[in-house]
Length: 264
Ligand code: SF4
Image (cartoon, rainbow, N blue to C red; front, side, top):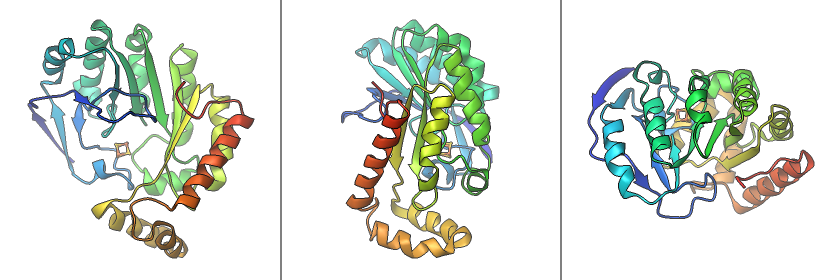
């Protein structure tokens, strides 16, 4: 892994279509690319992590010109990946966001977010979503080898929630034929750890990412290869029947365990 500090001419990106999943108006990524290296993710393909060294100054210039709205932190690259321990860009950005009266929604898989509970607690509106696509450590050892294990991530959910921070669990992406039999347990366990909501989204396979992901399937789950070909059928997302089934299944589990399956 290589690390490079770089100056970026802009930081805050405006979301142009309505964001039904994360409820955001803007996005910020303090780092470009991601050390966690999840094997279904495009952010993990480049071994160079760019540190947006001017991020705080840039945000302080940009925020006063924007209408208030929810800022998604880490929409593409994890804002609490290990390098954050040294640079603390995410922490500094949160302080600026709080000072300017904006709300934020953090997406992460890292327990490092706990370090910033003091800042998060003082924000007007702040959501933290912890991504846990699988509860099964043998699955996460294949797809998310460098990420804290699911049991640790669940403890993060509990600690944040117990600290008064609105916290959710994301089952993103839902890995077809691999995690469906854990979905009910995932919803139940999220509720047991005091999560306020569950988010989920199917796996998209675009461009080169598709070949890379299918190579992992071929190595670890060779019998599933044919099912993937049928499910995706030369498209970047699963067929309609699968998507509807997933929607109905999650709606029914979330209703049963009394936890919303969206941000309310
Ligand atoms: S933690 Fe998130 S951004 Fe990083 S590699 Fe994994 S899925 Fe991609």
